[in-house]
Image (cartoon, rainbow, N blue to C red; front, top):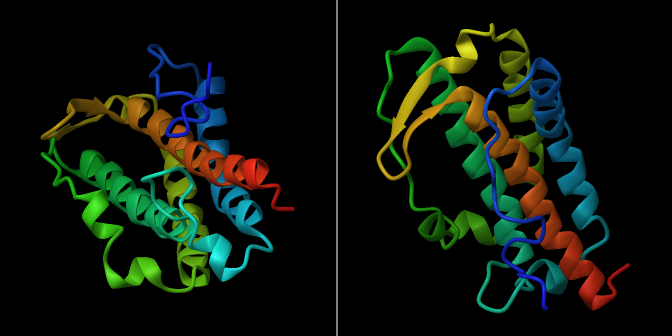
Amino acid sequence: MEADLRYPIGKFQSLENVTDIQRRAFIAAIAEAPEKLRAAIAGLNDAQLDTPYRPGGWTVRQVVHHVPDSHMNSYVRFKLALTEDEPTIKPYDEARWAELADAKTPVEPSLLLLENLHKRWVLLLESLTPSDWQRKFRHPERGTMILDENVQLYAWHGRHHVAHITTLRHRNNWR
């Protein structure tokens, strides 16, 4: 059976009744994501950065720009949920964002943005109390989400996109 190139680490699955140890592991995954993304693209040239990670998929460059776009939205969702009573968040069209001019530029600014965003985000996540993790926001497409689920989603999201790149490197024997 051939692997699903869209989900090299599998589809996201949320855990219920998350423990503090699990939560710390999710925060650690978010903290490590910028370094792992940088390592995944290390040494790639422009032609490789402009290679889709799968047929019909985004290029490596678009993936690198997408990660901070997505994580910025999640960071704001955390802050909204922590400061408002079940806010309804605004989703964004990630496919259209990936077609904008800035998604075709050098990747270094997005890597730096991700590194600094994650420094702030991890500080925020580490400050949350048990009741904070149960705070909610409403996503018009996904329904009500609690922060305990969203931290899991974004720990997975970083690993998911790094795996897009590392599996492409492996398939193409890019060292």
